Image 1 (cartoon, rainbow, N blue to C red):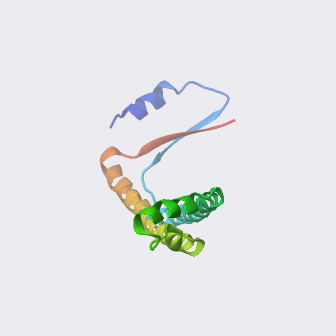
Image 2: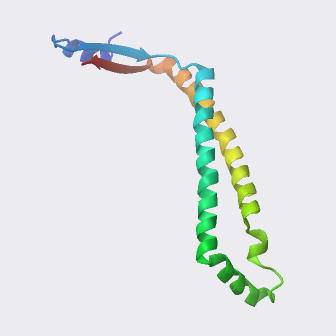
Image 3: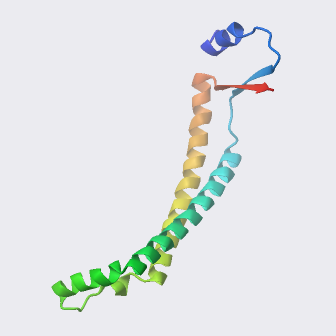
Length: 134
């Protein structure tokens, strides 16, 4: 079987001072992909919670919530205030829920992509990766 990658490997077979190795990635371990995507999801969850809290603190500091209370107070006779629904505990709870859902989705997505790659390798033959030592 002659592929484009094999032709390129033969074409670039001139002698050089560096050692070149060409490897074909033909399998991604499912559990390794799940663990790696879980760790990436944890990092993304931390970033999500911190960014929600920082945005809340900026909005609170600039007084946008108080101005929104005044705006909504004109329509509802002051019976419904935005500050009742948007406070630090509510923001933390909402960001935690978003982070947990994101954690599950990213972990499952990593597992699904590993499975799809392993199925696609049967058709394409894998990904050719070249390494050199300097």
